[in-house]
Image (cartoon, rainbow, N blue to C red; front, side):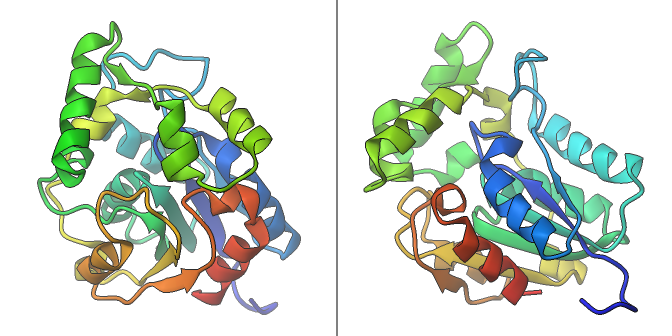
Length: 241
């Protein structure tokens, strides 16, 4: 970024069960390097609103409204994990404001397929059963999945802290789909950054990157590396600009 270039703003979208807090270590580093940052917590994933009856369209609407309300341009729309869904939906509506979409160990949605559809059959069914059993149609994250799939090998105190920060995911976020092509077919620039030891995605990360017509940039770490090794993630995001 040079003095005569307009500032690029990172808009950071979290994955399922997470809020803006999951991006804060990376956001601090990006800010220190001169980039404005907006880290979002999507509706239903904080303590100031109900998660009941929320659908994927609500998450997309929120991202769009926050970018438009702040009149942001030259946006680097950056998403983690399930956050690929609202990021993709928002990118189509904000195309004239988006400079690049970066998928960080994220789902690149296939047209008409939800998170439940993209997951292995047993997990997809578990999502639907959890929604049906929940009074507010949410899906909690099993602590064993956090420790063994999202954060394998990380120190137990860190795993336990993250477990206390998670909130149940609105079920409609996981069963909703987009009737949209990949952002690259819209003509938007995109990149895919993949954690080499990530076993939490429903499909191989390279397969999601291929939906964009890209090869992934591999970096060390597991699905939650933005919390445990934020410098690696920040360097990777800046390297693909």
